[in-house]
Length: 241
Image (cartoon, rainbow, N blue to C red):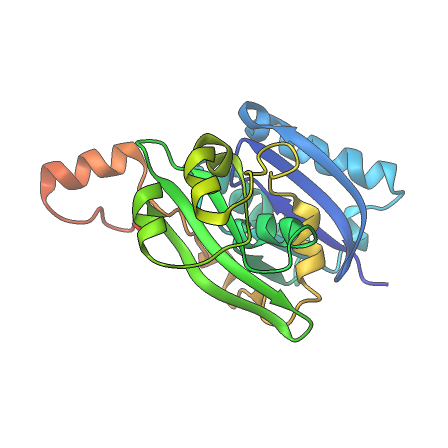
């Protein structure tokens, strides 16, 4: 079998997983405020527990956001660092929101919304429908308020994520079901491996060392710089959503 490493650091619930496209053989969580120091040790622990080594890897798949600016940078920097050591490995990417929705889809018959708390009264939100033929993006990852999301007229049968739990009353009015928050509604790196077997869910990265996450919102320091100078920060690489 092929062996892939998956990384999801988009939220406070970071995780790493090992497996092949469509199947997970091991997974480990990394505490949100320890991702910078804990991500690589978690990978090495998982390799040891599954009796594998870096040299056995056939590729890396990473959650590309939107989400935590710092967390996403850590995930991408870790993946790129490993790729430099393990020359020739491919890198794939998928939205972390899609991974969270995929986990929720096994408990729902219709579209699933994934909602992350983006602070400032906003959400990172997306809605997906999964079918044997592949995944359909009904609402692409967007920075939005709960009220504005409901006004879009998009239906969802279930909402997952820490944002869903935070705005549970809005979610109940929207979906007719209670929100599924952490830990069950959190993203997991293992979902990225499972999504590799879903047509259209995961995409290869053509230039891994030039790739940037989809942050969804600029970092606070970047926002202050752009407000002061009246123009985008040069080489920022972020997506303002």
